[in-house]
Amino acid sequence: MTNLSSDWSEGASLPYDLDEPHGATVDGEVYPRRLSHVSVVSHDHELFVLGGYGRTLDANTSKAFYHYSPGRNRWSRLPDMPAPRAAMAAGVIGDRLIVAGGARDNVPLADAFSFDFQSRRWTRLPDMPSRREHVGAAVVGDRLYVLGGRTPSTFATDIAESYDASEREWTPLPPMPTGSGGLGSSAPAAR
Image (cartoon, rainbow, N blue to C red; front, side, top):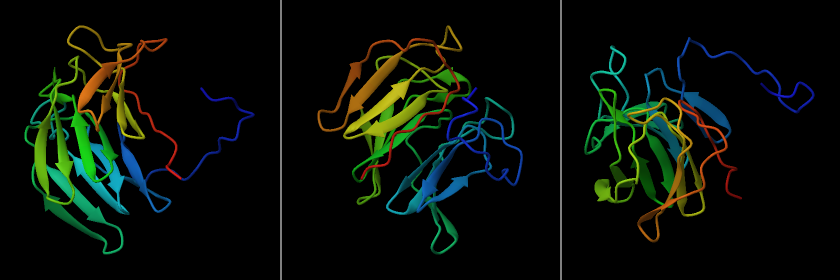
């Protein structure tokens, strides 16, 4: 619940109903994607959509990777992720997309990969210390922060970890004050 005297205001409704929506901004415009449990990121004024579930919730996990160019109003397919996943952490650090955790057919994962936008190739990264899905993710500097989520034993964990792209290593962080799963997160835009 937000403070009613805050600077929050109600915007336009989405053009369709969404459960657990994800979106990204490109040049001040917000782009949701009509898929289930995907990750959506922006890079270099373009939009990228990864994975998700098929028509049956928690099954038929996808490894698809799509690119949308707002300037050309065109979608294209990029090389698939190395493994299917949904409800994952994703963020862009420099010219690399980092993908970590998530779930495959409702089983939490810990593995991580990066996609190089220049070479258009995927690379395996060190696994996250914990298997989690339905996490919050945000990039600050050279770090991807992965917050909360669902584990094999709980729907709301207080685990927080960060991935340092320059050192290629994960660091455990102090636990969040309250466990949370199925959350969204963001970081201030770089200036």
